[in-house]
Image (cartoon, rainbow, N blue to C red; front, side, top):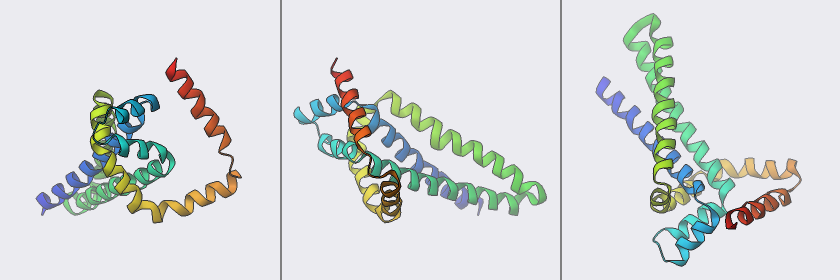
Length: 170
């Protein structure tokens, strides 16, 4: 039973780590670099451009999915601690679980994405698009509320994007 539980936790954390690393890698690459990759015909460059064009939707989707995966893994660890260690199980397993989740699903993916962002982003862009499509029913209502309360003030974001691109070009 413990083996099945450990495998389930490992699978959940692995999926979360892959999504986190892919998302980080996709947004570490500059716009001009993505354009160059696309012009040179690299596989996945078109998908990467679409991911970057849908920055807010992809980011929200990845956050929702990774949080669900991480919380599920933590819940499984906590419940296993209750049944295994008795009275001290919930606290011990939750503390250990939080540390494991932080290291495996957050710290390590950031390090991996920083090491080889281009290769990772190009290969994982289609997966990020798929995650965004699957999670859209959960994230679209929140996005509509954001637009409603923000008053559709997206001009600041456009100006910031233009400024970043000008700085990238030099």
